Structure formats: structure tokens, C-alpha cells
Figure (cartoon, rainbow, N blue to C red):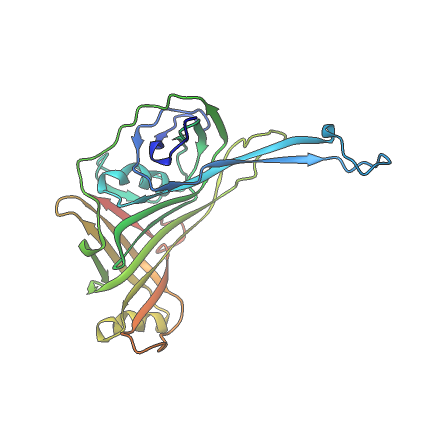
Length: 304
């Protein structure tokens, strides 16, 4: 008997022309874990028949809810154009490089996961959450895609699409990051930025599968942890004063990288406390806003 080992798996994405019509992946990712699956619901009659038993004919499948996500440990700049487009709604201005900004609508995509024993294809996907994070204690830039809502799941015996990986760059790491708060550089212990798209995952009507995945709300947030000293006094003053601050985060491998500009951020959270004899840090969760309703300028990401 041949067992299914995870190292044999593959995961790829492709942009769809028509939402829900599966396409072959154009970009495969060196992922560390994935959570794509389909939750299949059932309904059962509660009718009384003079017995405690329940016939198998009382139970029937109703709706299928496919979706999931995946994680890449050590993302590279060349991995980002497609993923940022699917999270923000626009493609990089230069194709594979350039500025990526927010749009009101999101593109749909197909996810193909070779789960070794079977190949699963998820069509009509939209991205609910994209998170980028790094830390002194976890140097590789980590990318998490989560809350992906799909319209359908198809299962086949394979073979999977032949994987095409981008391998011309090295992973981006925390030691090569720069954080500016109002143009002043701070030493950062850990940082995260996330784009959360609220999606309507319940548009079934009288169908077993989703008819569409409309966008509803959007939220941009994150967290920085910096030294608690005179260098962070200005950021702390913005926090306690309730004023916005401009955050700029960048990663580079010396040639390629990504710059993330968040010009209107409110810091949230708590003022610092002394919990031990160790060196103190200032943790500042934040929410990124637009300059005005409908401006769509809460974030700009530039891939180089």
C-alpha cells in the first residue's frame, strides 16, 4: 500500500475570466500548509414513526461550502503580483512590478490543490484575507491567505497541472525590512499588515452550490512592536492623541522587494505596562483608513 505524503502536494492559482469557470493555474506556490476543503451540510426529517430509529432515507445533502487558505513561509517579491491583485482588486501597474491599489471589486480565481491521492479544484474563489508578517524571532516574511470563499469544488484522480514555480529570487526577511512612522525610522521587533475583505458566503438561493461571492465590506489593519523609548515617543503621542500616522513598511533582497504605504493609520490597543525585568517594547495595533469615503487610498503596495 502506498501512503500519501504531504511533500508530494502542490498548490497553484489562476485568474478566471468568467467567475466560477475553472482555469488552469498559472502560478504555483511553495506553501507550508493549506486548508482547502468543502463543508457539506445535510438536513434530516424529524417526523415521528413510533420508533426511536431513523431511516437512512430521512437524511439528504443540502448545500456545499468550499473554501480555505494557505501559508507561504519565505515569500518572494515575484510571488506577490498575483496575490496582491486578488486581495486588493487591481493588477500591478507594470504587470509584474509597480503599484497595486485598492478597487471596489475583486477578481475571481481558481485554486488547484494536488492532495496526492486526489486533485481538488476550487472555482469561483475570492480572497477574504491576506496577511503579511515578520519578526525578529521568525525572520522569513510570512504570507497567509485565508477566508477564501469558493463557488464549487471538483475532485479528480489527476494528474495535476504541471507546476510552474518562480525561483529567480530569494525570500524576503525581517532583517531587510524598514519601518517608517511619519518618515521617522523605528527598529521593529515584529510587524503585520492584513487586508480583510468581507464576502457574502451564503448566496445559494435554491442551489446546492454558491451562485456568486459578492464583496461587502473591507478592513485594513495590522500591528507593530517597537522599542519603548524616546525613538517611539512620536508614535506614542499619535496613539494617545488620537491622530493619524503615516506608516511605510518595506522589504528588499537588494534588488527586488515590496513597499507598503499606509498613510492614514489610527493606533489602537493599550498603553505599555511593566511585566518583568526585561527590555520593554511598545505594541501598537493599527487600523488603516481612506482619506475620505470612496477614496480607496488606505494602502498602496509597490512591487519592485
